[in-house]
Image 1: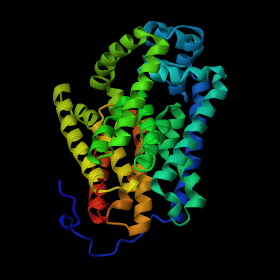
Image 2: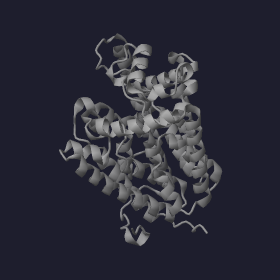
Image 3: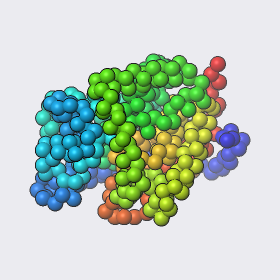
Image 4: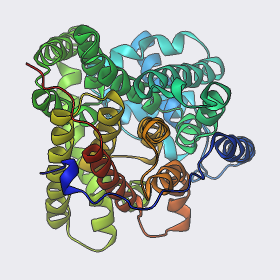
Length: 415
């Protein structure tokens, strides 16, 4: 794949800058008001509705908190036993509705990580978990994007983060996507600076292995051998620690549940397809059988992987690497929910920082705006039942980033 500057047509006319700090602040303020109002309405409905189909804020965190409760007051295997876990959820959250009743789908290492959550009451633990995710994501994005160099960033940075639809949707569910996005961003930031810390961040991502699927390949492409070795060591240690804490039975049940996940949710879960910005979901909604949908997903994943490796081999710019890694990961993964689109905070900030330094290229500001709004579209789509636009947005973002990679100076090769 050739992304050299000579292979890309240069824009002849200057691009008008409309994504200014003032407009970012204005759009963020409006979205924050909308998000607070929407969250308040959903919270009120969730507390007062007796309909089991009603969405209730914090439904994802209820699962984490219940698993922690079982670790503290029961046995680890109960989290992976679907009937036992469903009974525990029903007992702890009797009015939660069907949205919460999912099997525990995380490896034993994550079960160990969530153990302290139930030491605090749910009503306190949930908002603290959200605040922790926002703070860590904000710090990680600030680091990897160099957003502080953007004019006006110090005044609008936190407002823009709090109002980002990806953050609002993740917070509404109480999911862990902000924490995993922070790990990915910090891994990119530390690859050349502190390989051991980069490896630790990648090792922590092993609790959600599908989100770390491209990292070994881009590390090899970048010849980041020390970070690769540390990542393998940390991932092995974290996995072994989880197995040692819970025993073999939770691991066996985890692998068994993974098969159920593929059949129940990914292959046949129509509500999931409307909320999942993946090529697989789009293919299934278009009527393709699972085998063809997986084949299409695999082809796009191969292209995304090649693009990410090409950029990581060519450039050592952490902003470009981080943006491409996140977008390629979302394109390659068949299992992505709308609440995981808080990962898009990374390429959004990185693209704004690059555009501020080198000038915007045609289409970049538009794709930043569309990526910013995509999580809200995906959140509402199970009710709206509109076409699945996520794969198109993410694919266009990857193409835009490849074009940008070809216009930047080539970084010195690693020896």
